[in-house]
Length: 73
Image (cartoon, rainbow, N blue to C red; front, side, top):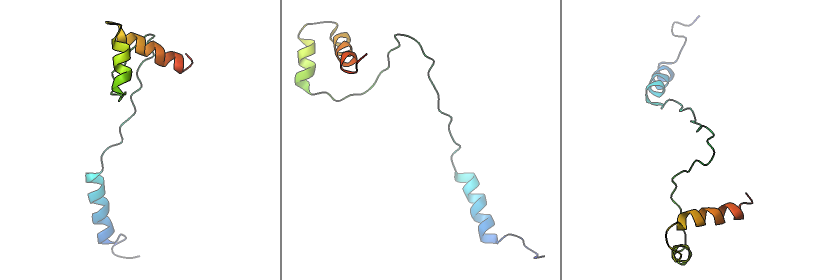
């Protein structure tokens, strides 16, 4: 039996890795709430945004309805 069962370099690398590795984050699932809205960043052509805004307040709801219809929901 060898006096040192592990190579010192391997032991040092393993110790360094265990200290510097970030812990695995568990995915957080949002509870299923009907009608829940989520804030997102989305790049949309300015002419499309202006078209929805022309009809005044509620343009975000109208845009969401158009996206929902396009998604088949």
